[in-house]
Length: 319
Length: 171
Image 1 (cartoon, rainbow over the protein chains, first blue to last red):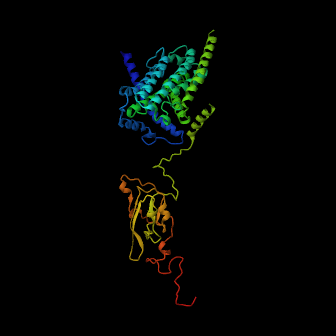
Image 2 (image 1 turned 120 degrees about the vertical axis):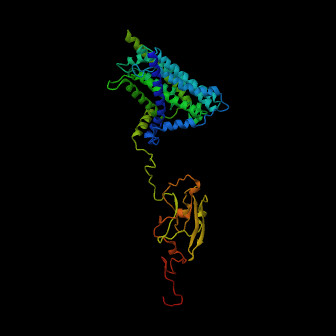
């Protein structure tokens, strides 16, 4: 009974913290984009413009929540919920600090990969149900991009799994006690980072949205809080990939003892979130065929090669 | 690949640059003296109205936002009976200022004219007239004009010789 209550408390806490972070990432992103573009960014509502999030949310709630008459209603409504739900599900397996995690699954990494693959359904269904050519094009692009990048995302992580000998994320973190995997698996880190950006369809890989080509891609027809869900899902995805990067390659909660483990985890994640925003501020979007070519012709062989070499070294060490 | 990393680094370094944005209500923009902003009607050094109601500004105005009615006082000095500028139409092109032969209508560096009510943007003569000579101090049209409008007698104006006595033979 007591442990159940503890679990529920943990879940509520993690949910609350994550949604708050995702909401305030909107402010952070605007502010940081402005900082990197020699502007000052939102600074009117509240201290440092922090309340712009509140204003934004109120605005989204009061917008007309319109479902186009030509859309497939049920799927149209379900799609935005899927993206937020799948990303939040992935957070179940992330060890924030020793003791602060919801479920320490022994297939944690596979669960994360499965959930991030499910996220593609929200894009495909949302774009398809909209019954709009731009949405459909965005959805098609999103589906092919996410499915192909899923391949080497998984492959790049196998090196980490080999070195730590476990799919359990807390074991992976503990295996980095002496040496972070960024040192031993730099190639895997780069491949996972690129695949992660593509997976969250953030700039420069925001090809499913591509506002200069496809209006707003798969969510062209969405308005009000349904659009807000896609938005929150995107920011949650950024947080998720940052958290995964930290867990898998940067030693998770591990760090010098003068700060508590949770603080270390949050700090490292924050650095990666900032890096994601910096990417948005600096890089242009590649063409669609360039993206696919880059994925299949460069990243896949690199990931496979990394897998082969890591496997060989692990075999040699164990002899 | 290198160029991508270089782009990222350069963008990051922009963090330490000076901001381009001016936080407006707290910090005012510095406007140039010849900025084309709010339109005013200036006065001559003797604080009389400069406008002589010639309608050239109204004719030059490309959006027809100026309307006026000229009249004369008892000395024959022309002045506008009413002078109305509809600033909701005005495009601040400054053609009226160029057209004005007496330097009466001038554009000044001020743009803070926002109103909640569109009708409040229609400025009447008392809103337009200022107690200043504007950009051309010391100029008084009636001192150089060819007529006596109660400002100067015959031959008393600036750059004007006293009238010659045509009945005298003396130089």
